[in-house]
Amino acid sequence: MAIPFIKELSFSYGEPRNVTPLIRRIVAKNPGPFTFHGTGTYILGKGKVAIVDPGPPDIDHINALLDAVRNETVTHILITHTHIDHSPATATIKAATGATTYGFGPHPTRPDGDAEESGDHDFRPDVVTKDGDVIAGHGWTVDALHTPGHISNHLCFGVREEKALFSGDHVMGWSTSVISPPDGDMQDYMTSLRKLLPRDDQMLIPTHGAEIRDPQNFVKAYMAHREERERQILSCLREGIDTIPVMVKKLYAAVDPRLHPAAARSVLAHMIHMIETGRVIGDGPPSVATRYKMAN
Image (cartoon, rainbow, N blue to C red):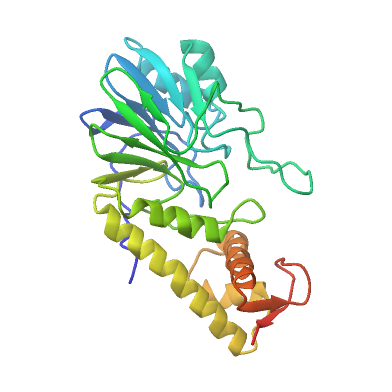
């Protein structure tokens, strides 16, 4: 079941574009192998609005956002998670607007205590937002959905009036999401994907790339891809390929080599999941350098 990726996006950097009658997108000029064209920051509502994922601390992007809401009042700032392409501009936007910030919590701390370079360690939400919380604004209502996996503090935000879900990096139209242990967790990720299936969303709006207009089938394809990846990893083990770097060269041969280190992290997440479910064992604690074999 191939993922029907969406590679097209009509945009100009710094220019707001309507996604729905209530939602506008402004793309930051931070393109890259993990951000696609750049971070899509969203303005929700009219008159009194929310900003979703203010993005990186790029002054041009921040100025574009403030220009877009110059004649409006920003009442809320919603954060899907605390990677550096999503939340660092929050402090500047909050200082300029006085808006209240909402998020699951600060950036998670690694078990070894080291700081993760890709994390925004300064963010602290004004309002700690949990699964099932409702955030109401002027003409819009948002339901928070805790979706750990990509990162443990990831939230999605469902807009009732549009039947649209801001999906952050949980589900993206242009690419799969990186799951990087120790905080990234494949079992949590699959559980979080399943949470989307019974919803009646008509659109997923990721932070990177275009909106997804067939959500349930797209999520099913996402899940099928992960299940197929585990079958491929098990096949590699049966063939005697017992290290993650060699698996990545085989399984991701058609993928930009710049993404291979991230792919290795996702393969490690799969390995940890398969160890936890009794299918695989390693010659030491799970890591990219560990040698693995079938449990039976």
